[in-house]
Length: 258
Image (cartoon, rainbow, N blue to C red; front, top):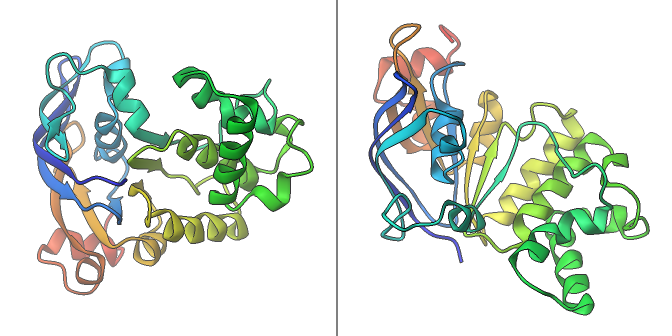
C-alpha cells in the first residue's frame, strides 16, 4: 500500500558542506512526483535522504524530518535497513547483480527478508517481472545472467527487484538517462501502471519526461555554485509547466537557464 511522505525543514550535509537547505513539501500516495532542476542543485541528494541512503556516505548527515504516513523515518530506534525495505530505489544506471540469474536478481531481496518456499518465490518472481512488464521477454531465460539483458531490460529487471519486496515508495534517480527512446517509453508506461500500487518519486533532467509521467513537479535550484540547493516551488505538473508562480521556474522550463 502506497504512503504519503511529509518532509519538514530538511537539510542535508556532506561534512561541513550543506547540499540542500530547509526543504518542506509532501508527496501524495499513488502518484508520480518529478524532481527537476539544474545539475548540482541537490535533487539526487534529497532523493537519497528519503530512504536513508544519504547517510551511507562518510560524514553525511541530515537535519529536519521525513515522515511516512506520520512515522518519522529518522526517529530514534528506526532501523535504516528497515526503511530501505519500505522505500525502494532504482538508480541511474541499471545495476543487476552480475553473477546472478534473472530469477535470482528478483528473488534476492526476498531471500534477505526471510525464508520462502520455492513455489512462493516462483510466484513472486513472476508477479514482479509481470509488474515490470518484462515477463514475456525473459520467461524462457530466467536462469541466464541478468547482465546479459539489454540496457532497457536490465533497468526493468532492477524495477522488478525493487517491487518484489512490496515497498510502499519507489524512488527513481534518472532511471532513463542511459536508455534509448524505446526503452525510455517502456519505463514511462510502466510508471503509469506502478503508481496504482506505489508512491513514486523520480529525478529527471528531461523536461518532456517530467511533463509526461508526473502528477506533481518540484523545481529545485541553487543561487550560486557552492550554495545549497533549495526547493523553489512544487505543484500540479500542468500548472508548473504552463503557469508557474516563480520566474526562476519559468526560466528553467523555457530553457533560459540551466
